[in-house]
Image (tube, rainbow, N blue to C red; front, top):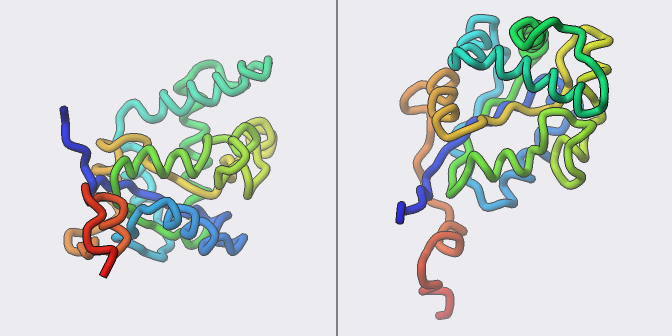
Length: 202
C-alpha cells in the first residue's frame, strides 16, 4: 500500500473578482478550516506572459477546457456557439487572459494530505451556477457559462485550483521561485497526522 503524502501541495489563485468583492479572508478561512496549511502567499498583478505560461503548460488544456464548455451547454439541452472544442477552448483562453490580468490576484500554495482533492471539493465546480451549496463557488457567486458567453467574457468563478498533483507541481513552479515556500510545523498537524494522540494529557 502506498504511503499517503502528508506534504502534498496545490496552487490556488483568488482571481480579480474575488479580490474586488473582498472575499480574500473568507476564501482563506475555508481552506484553513479543513486542516490544510498555507505555505506560500503572494499578492500580485499578473502579466500576460505569466498567465500564458500557467494555462498553456498543459498542451491539451485548450481542447479540454473547450470540451468542458461544450458539455456544460449540452447538459442543459443547449448547443455551444463554437464549431468545435478547439475553437471553444481558444475563446475561453483569450477571455481568461483578459480576466486574470485585469487586477490584483492572491496566489497561494496549500499543503496537506490530499491537498489537491480537498481544495477542489471546497472550491466547487468550475461553473458557479451548477456548483454545490456549501462550496465557495456555490455559496459566494452566481455566474454561468451561458451568461459569460453572451457577455463575451470569462466565467467569474472567484478561484483557480490545480486539477491534479502533477498539474499543481507544474503550476507552483510558474508562480513561485525556489525558496519562496515556507517549511514550518503547525501544532494541529499532530492531531491530523500522528498515529497515536500522544502528549495531549499532561
